[in-house]
Length: 232
Length: 218
Image (cartoon, rainbow over all chains, first blue to last red; front, side, top):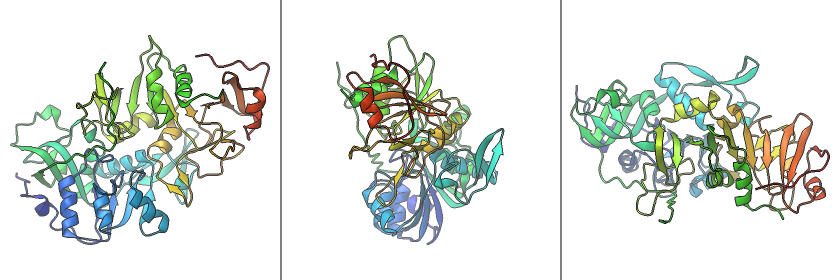
């Protein structure tokens, strides 16, 4: 079993206009940089992107927004992207803002084969509009549906040729959840190894969820907020 | 004198108890970590997938793969653990986090909170705030008592889109410490040198003032 493709271009070759994509990452941490570059190059449009954030103006998903490739964003927080906020307020871009835990859980539900989940997040707010509310043990919950995404595009630290993945530090975030949730899951990794080189105890995402894998190159890993302390 | 943001954080830190798991929001809440009292051990939860958040790294040691929910570079501590976003909100939803501290644009006297959207002006998104307020056992709001225009942020009803309903338990503002009770805001403490009258004037929601109100101690 070999799921290796040659490059980001090969990994995304069949993504068409109008596709629904999940993109892993939190802020700029753990985003699939190589695939985003390839998507920008390919120039496909009318995309629906499910991602916690929308990058910054000139990096991450922000690059796809610049090229007007995105029809709709489904995110929890878009505050670091001025161009995004402008497009949102002017109505140029369709945006569905949803609670971060709901976003994660809707990915998880898809990966676990569950059609929907109940969550208390957003009860009594505009997030609840049009949603079924059900009371369990005296508390109200909203019915939230599993995502239905054509592709999940994730970034891992290490992966093997069978698609098993290990994530690093907080670059894990949404990546393993989205990896489980795509009809086709594409993983780009910093280090691609032979089966057996990752210890079975340490694998976060079993390769069964991953369809295509490749070793990425030239990771920039831009830091959004560099904060340091003084040496005493 | 009204408290500085640092002093608000310092006063909130007195609410920490040994063994607490705590989620600190962005802004003033983040500063609480600088004032954890001696002899008290708390574990900081960062909802992007870390328990046991440590201080900022030394210059040159920052790691782009290791950030907090405010996207700041951070470090780990002995006993730290990483997890994915679903587990992170799982532990929040399941009530495992003992205390949540977050900022707000408005709080109502029934404990409703608004902190994510100003229609037509600011739409950054709710991030994890709606999940946190819907499930946290104990929520303290850290905020200024009035907005930049001088209008009260402690209201009979929120005017902005809500983040959550009937969830705030306590407010530490630059002027006062207040509990949210079924009968409205209950004034517990006032900032040093701030009069009860000033707090009454700047609180638009129902306010209970009983007996002498002590000054905050630091």
